[in-house]
Amino acid sequence: MIRLCNANREDLNIVNKIAVLFLAYKYSEFESFVETENYINKNINESTQEKLLQTLEKFHKAVDELSRIYRRKELVKALFELECRRIEEHGEFQDLPDGVIELILALLDIKEGEKFLHVNAGTFKIPMHVADNEKISVCGSCESQNSLYMGNIRSAVVDNRIEVKFGEILESELFDIQADKVLVYPKYGRLNSSDIVNNELNNFCERICCREWAYTLAGILNQKRGGVTLAILPENVLVNEADKDIRKKLIESGKVAGIISLRKYDGLQRNLVIFTENNTCVKMFDAKDFFQNINDNDTEEILKQYNSGSENCIEVSNDRIAANNYVIYPARYLIETKIDFEGENLSNFIKTIQRGAQQINPQELNRIKSDVPTDYQFLNIQDITETGINQNLTYLKEEAYSKYKNNFVSAGDIVISKISPFKSAIIPDNNKKILISGNLYALKVADAVNPNWLLLCLKNSKIIMQLNAMASGGVSKIINPRNLNQIKIPKVSFDTQNEIAKKYTALIGEMETLNLKAEEIRNKIKNLIDV
Image (cartoon, rainbow, N blue to C red; front, side):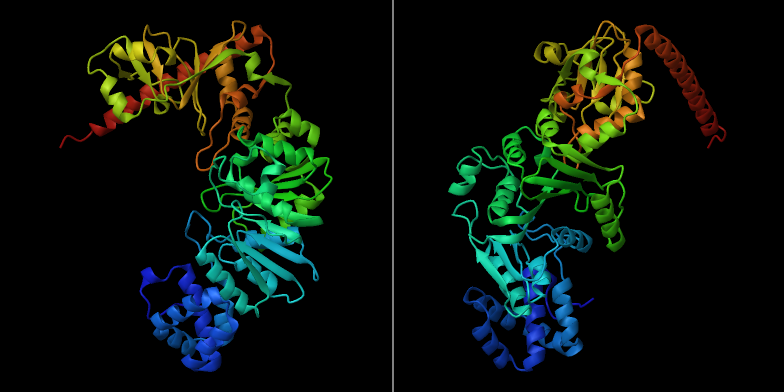
């Protein structure tokens, strides 16, 4: 690992690191700062010349020392391997792990004589690797000056074989590149209707809510007929209601070919979405539970299972995707193959799903809580235990009932957390009115359903597996009421429900007795020595 010397750590952002390494590489060839400057003026794009010359002046000692310590092949190797691990400029410069890059390039299968485009190329690490093969034409687009600098510098490493395109994709007409293979690592975030002024994007779909889809669409529109586009997308844009229209347009036009879900590698769960033409079904592979680290062996196994099929790979027809609100997240469809019981939607077992009070933050709770017992209590997610609900709930003032009346629940309701891990319990009949927090739902159980039996179902591992598959999000997985209603519950007779519920209640009673006994023993142990 090359260490950059004679430079303040705060000065060494990814741009300066690439520039200093490149300058050391070139300086070691000429052994003269004057000749290095001449090379820059003759061979580097004008937009980057001044930046490089400023860097040479500021870091000349580091450049000189690196050129003396390391051989030229070590310096150029470092330029290929250097990556940005921190999230800089809204994630634009965050490089992918090497294993993910290898998997992406294997899926794209870029051949000699083809043209490769990387939309939003960031640090231009991937285009530089592809351009190392001089028989492949390479292009990278970027929207920031720093990305432009890195693109021009890394292009110079491979004899200026990268065509660097600079411009705002959403605010101008698309580059007419027509590449055989396209990679999109999009910026993230919501869009306003005025953000997209590009006519081609607006003509493809009237409603594009997320930047991820706007950049992906830009990549698809720059793809040559018969080519392949691969986009790296977060889970939420594959399932949310806001982006349903764009997913519908892509499915109906037969452009979605395959999706591979990966493990989290930067705090967010990513999916590789492959776009080609004339697809009537989508191949979906959930790889996130089977690969701890994405390395060479994992890449080979992912490709093998994706191409040859496995229990975690499924082909889903476009009609079936349409029937599922155009959700294209693999776990949603694979979960059905792992349910070995005949079931019905949860909506058939309940009357309604009631939401908790979203407005109650710590400050509001402190304002409405009571220091003396009242008829009103507050239930939060941490109050749900293995055996039920904590008996020592926070008491509330009477004004809380009038203000949050619609968020109070009844005895016999089942509360379930909306955030994974999913905890559930039954509201006890203790003559108290209970207000539930915004991170809980309350299920009003249907008349012909035993609440304890339904609670036991919601605690079952196969039901929990469904909940996790139907939930979405980045760091925290959240399930919405519509998806919660679609969870499959086994269909059994009311008499059988009652028998199971009776056994469950008895076992919970035994557990509570044992817990009390264990607590009694702990107290005795604490009092063995009187200090």
